Length: 187
Image (cartoon, rainbow, N blue to C red; front, top):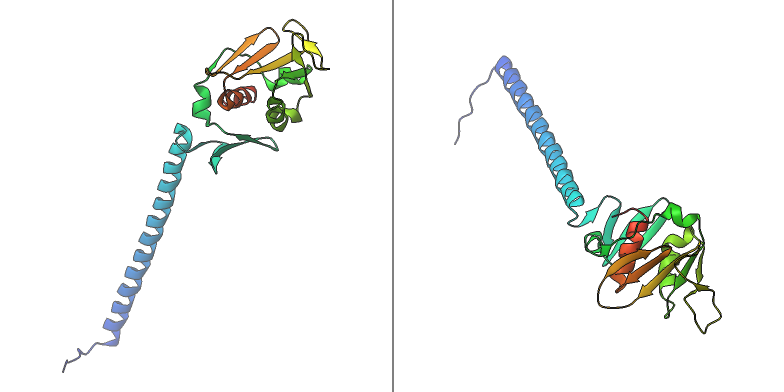
């Protein structure tokens, strides 16, 4: 059997006060730990954003595709911004310049226009054309006119080249994505 110590009311009051203070400080300590851990997580996440490890500001990966917001437009890419940066490029064109001109697309397989309509098509009127002469009933364009002509050459090397008003997208979808990233100023 355990014998209880006799405690005076004054001692009990002092003990209760100590217990309440200890609990108050413990509660504050737990809140501080929670706040610091949340801030730490935020900084760790922002480091990934700045380095391009998993996403960038305004550009994020979702289900294997990269999504970027441009105003109220949502752009979808199949290539990460870091991969698109590695595509060799000498183009010097912005969305603002495109919006002041007619833009034509030359693509034998008629796929490029679909990609571009989803991105720059909201800001620019796109039409099919032929680069040089063609058998189809399309306008025949070259690089010296006042209109822009975007030509997709599917080949092994990914690059973007500009010759006057012609923009040559060489390679696969990575080059197309690199072109759109550059036009919107995302890379």
